[in-house]
Length: 197
Image (cartoon, rainbow, N blue to C red; front, side, top):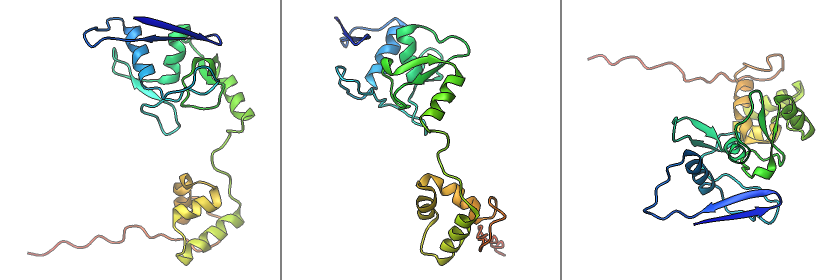
């Protein structure tokens, strides 16, 4: 049984497969695998269709291609199922600025330059802010007191705990070398000697 819904220019094909029925068409199999992993959303509104399967740290959904076994991006597959293959040198852009969205109406074909222009326009240039030498000096003295962890300092100075590796590089002297303040080179210490028998 097949039921098609057309909402605002989008075509959603909902198929119910019985347990005994097998899917032989690769395209149909990919379509079923894609939409089975999308979180419920209201098709009558302009809400994002969020990917509920495996996501990369950047938020892009992935699934495994049953033919090749290689991972494919969910948003690219969603676009390809409606419009066909992606031309060479083109990317799929998110109009909603949400990397886990797979809704075809929120996806648009474009070039890498257009994608970078979108990034600038939406102010997604850089995740973490730059630190001044004064910030780094304050950070070094704060860490020396022992009251704050590296994760706490990342939240205070960079606005996100994701900046902890940056804080670690500053504390160990690998970055912002010209800033003044106490550096910590804790390391792992010296390895214990071997036992004598």
